[in-house]
Length: 263
Image 1 (cartoon, rainbow, N blue to C red):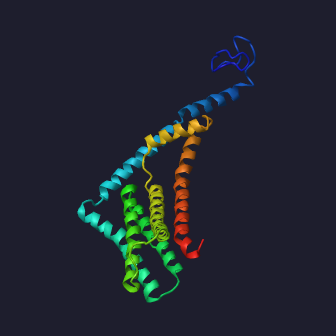
Image 2: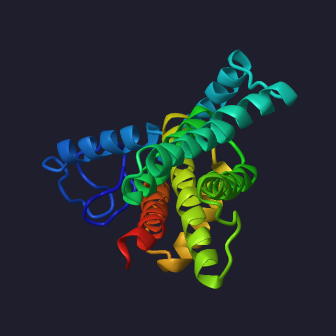
Image 3: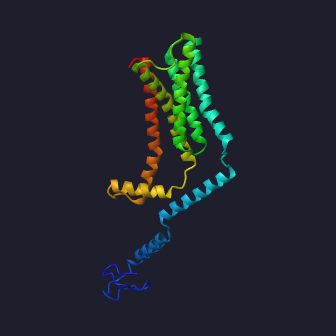
């Protein structure tokens, strides 16, 4: 213990400082409380160690979940996913086109709305079930969009005798915009599904968090504590993908309805 007057080391039981001879009687209870609080504070573990332990337990839980629920792989699983998440929405879009343009001969606005609404839930369910690689399935969305537009054009050609492929730049632009609306709708579902999956199965991202903390720390000039940096990273992870999903939704709606609404 140190003397509150001269900061000299004194015995814990001393009532008078042997250096400055000041009376310590009034300060003794306060010094004892301070020493007790310092001891309690020293006994508390570093918050960073708690975060590391939590990440380790989350990783163990994720590993145990993967062992208990192994992901089916192989040609059969690939064909099943291809049928459910690509061919099924393709069939629904072509059926919707036939009903609206041929059977009912109604406003094309309904078809464009359905073309935006149908792919999204398929992408959502696909990425909500488990973590998947984005690039292969994005290629699948491009195939879905192109096959849908060409298939719709083929159905129309059977009735009206019109060419299947576009004949001028204006028609090509309409083809591409329509395909983009379908593709971005599926992509929006993929992003939303990935966000929801990440929230319920948050992986241990020690290296990723370290890199993000380093980058963000440089951007803000090192003015944040590790706890504040961790909170900021969680917020970025939570809202970043949602903002991107909103953007892709807006693009899908704009490209899908632009030609019908005439703007």
